[in-house]
Length: 131
Image (cartoon, rainbow, N blue to C red; front, top):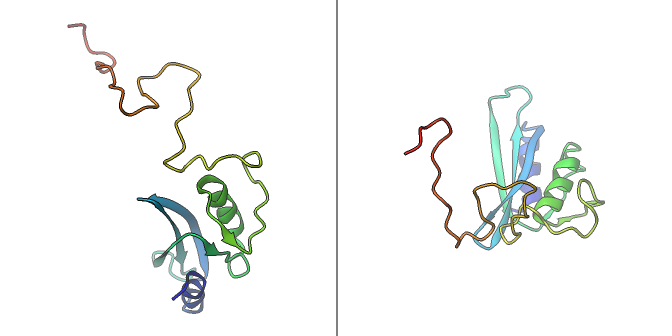
């Protein structure tokens, strides 16, 4: 069953609210996940997952507009049929939530490293006495 037809079937079954939609990067694949809720029973929900790219569902769930555009920008996912005008980032920006995207330099020093191969210096928790 395709992404769109699975969401359509759940909507027809009473799951009429798209609560959230986002993506995760698993191995070398981006997977889009949507959470549908029944308005009559808010404790009842279903998750639908599909590898990207997927079809836009804005015509079925108007609330998906923001979620799809944000996911497209942050993960570089293509939603077929979506008007993907820039939402939060400048045009042609790389997808910042992809694992391949390096951690940008920070304005202030912090104990982490962009390169995970470099060891981190040992630190004592705040408030502990000197050794």
